[in-house]
Amino acid sequence: MKKLIQFKQVSFEYNHESEEEEPVAVLHDITLSIKEGDFVAVLGHNGSGKSTLAKHINAILQPTEGVVWVDGIDTSKEELVFEIRQQVGMVFQNPDNQLVATVVEEDVAFALENLGVESTEIRERVDAALQQVGMYEFREHSPHQLSGGQKQRVAIAGILAMQPKCIVLDEPTAMLDPQGRREVLKTLLSLNREKGTTVVFITHFMDEAVQANRVVVVDGGQIIADDTPKAVFSDVEQLKKVGLDVPQVTELAYELRKAGIDFPNGILSVEECVAELQKALGG
Image 1 (cartoon, rainbow, N blue to C red):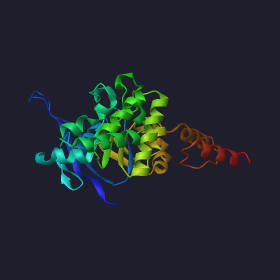
Image 2: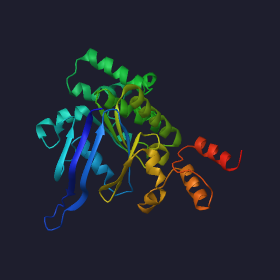
Image 3: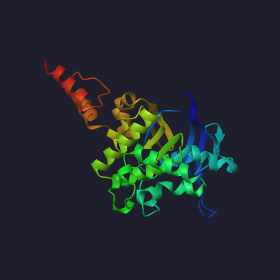
Image 4: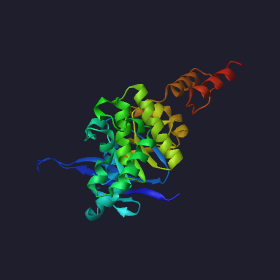
């Protein structure tokens, strides 16, 4: 598959308002590529640099050193930022910050109207985006009367209407209840697996990360792991060392191994865990 996002030796520093204070280094020599159709979960504790990394993908930030390419475009070229943001849409943690209209379908149409898209095409794109996220029946509702999960799905629809190749989501489920989290994750998995949309998903929830086809772990502004969920979560001690949890069933398997029970690495689901327990118990 084609490489859609590429970081080459990227470092980034935040400058203070006062010139007397030293810049704060946040990313250090990041090299990373994301292919079209990937679903990448990005993990890291608060302050690890994962959100800063995400903001480089749609040119909210540009590297202090190194280069980021989006679909072959260098994100440092200011005259091409608009084109980059048509390829990469960004969804943030609080959906209320992205909802601007008083009716759901008007909110989804907002960016398209600003771009001067023809009205017939706007109608088609808005309907298609709302259907993709399962919110078409709410198209005439007020966004502010929706649940948190529904609001976030409307925010995602607003990005989808732009027809990007990639969606970057910065902890989109952090403020949602379990039902809302499930709704949003189901939507993202459907977009990725059925439509081929590339997804970069920053999360604190390990049960969400295991749904990705790839997990990237960031610590201290550096990538310390980049592999399949099974491979990354097999190294429980490394993740704990950088302040991260693992899925509960993975933790159980880890503790059983510590207790001397022959139990495999990389258990990610309850079903896998039950099957291995039955084997261990001679069932």
